[in-house]
Image (cartoon, rainbow, N blue to C red; front, side, top):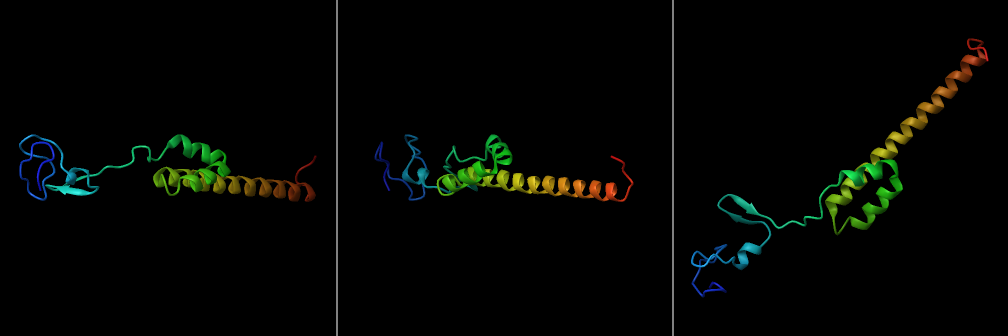
Length: 117
């Protein structure tokens, strides 16, 4: 392999040209290993987002829609939206169940005469 900038002959595994310092095609290869480290070129927009997770928590349908839209293009962000939506649904179900149990218990206590209305 030869450097595209200065024409120096390079090792096939070279990441940069030792003569001029210009990156080779290996530099841009995702996951290329260099002396025990890994050069990764990730999508910087595809990061978990706390704001979207909170939005998905309070509005689970929004989280579901965002997950479906981003599941292929931004999987990390989509996953954080899905987690927020699932957690929101679980918490909503628990709150509704506790509300119905409270109403049931108050009704039973009123019918038993233990609470006077």
